[in-house]
Image (cartoon, rainbow, N blue to C red; front, side):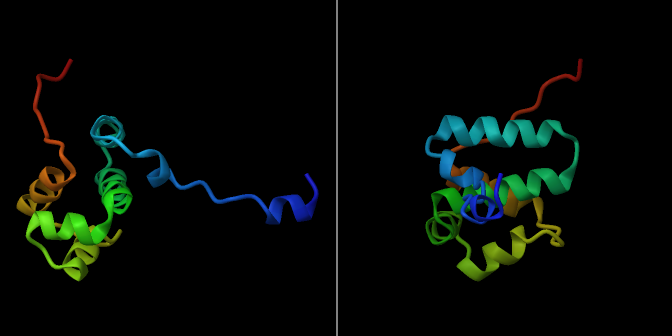
Length: 99
C-alpha cells in the first residue's frame, strides 16, 4: 500500500458492530473466556460505548463520568458496578462448570 492509502484507512472500531444484545453478549463472552480481566474490562467499555455511555450510565444508575472512571484501563470496578453495567447493556453473567 502507498503511504496515502494507509493514511486514509479507517481505524477499526468494534463498537460499530455491536448493534444487538446478541452481538454484545458474544463479544463479552469471548472477552471473559480470555481469562484476562483487562480484556473483559476493555470489552465492557467498548460495549458501553456502542450503546452510548450516557444511556448506559443512566440505566446503571451511575453518573457518566463515574462510568468512564469505572471502565478506564487502570480501574478496578466493583463487582456490583460491573453487574449494573451488564444489566444496562441487556446481558447477564452466567456460571457453568469448567470443562
